[in-house]
Length: 77
Image 1 (spheres, rainbow, N blue to C red):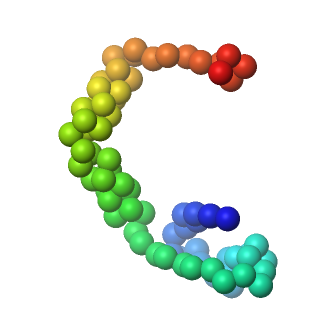
Image 2: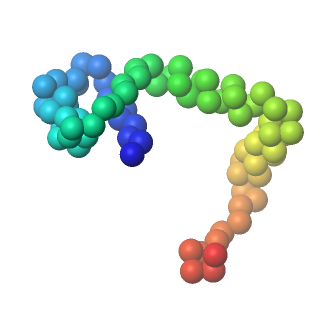
């Protein structure tokens, strides 16, 4: 199981820890902490590193800005 929590550090309390313990009872877990802005920037940098991927993503952003969207219905997929 992989779970991501986004929470302000000021909101951390004993109840939060208790909920994690309840969700992952008797299992070894790994906790990694980073600032949200840094994580988002790292992901963006990774996606834009490859020139072909960068061109594809920038084209997709441009299509959205220009209203060129494709609508798909779940039943049609």
